[in-house]
Length: 154
Image (tube, rainbow, N blue to C red; front, side, top):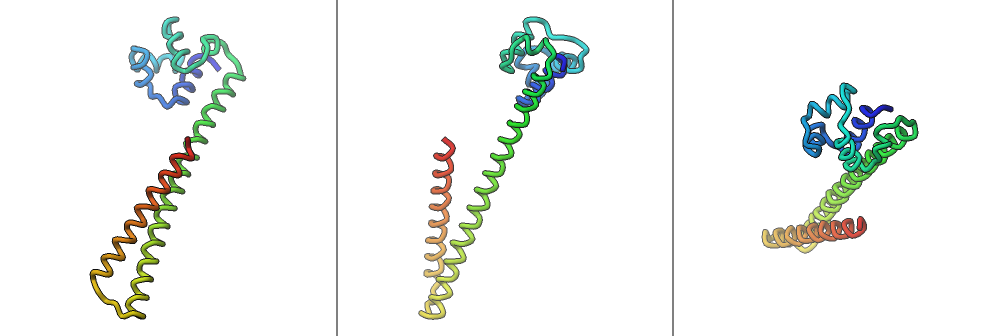
């Protein structure tokens, strides 16, 4: 892998656009494009800055090595895996909150039906009270779940 390929892969692995990287280096986006296309090579000063931004050695940028390529690919895959895991956690959280909310309101509806059928309670105030309590329970579940998931990440 040559320097142009390394710059491209490192930039993408750090989720930077050509514009973002150009801004960090105080160069034009076209300069970044030329580096990545192998049309030119960064000046020594820019190589130093690139090594600092990407946390790699200048030797790494300048020397070809299959091990370097593998390590970059591994880093990219690890980052993608973390993003997928985070996305799955968020989806799981949403599913839990939706299902717990539905369950709470179904229980509230069941209590209302039992009250109406067995105790002949038909009062709009009772319905509103039950819905208010159910909503409070849903809010508490949401807050409790958010607190638990935030503390488990730390």
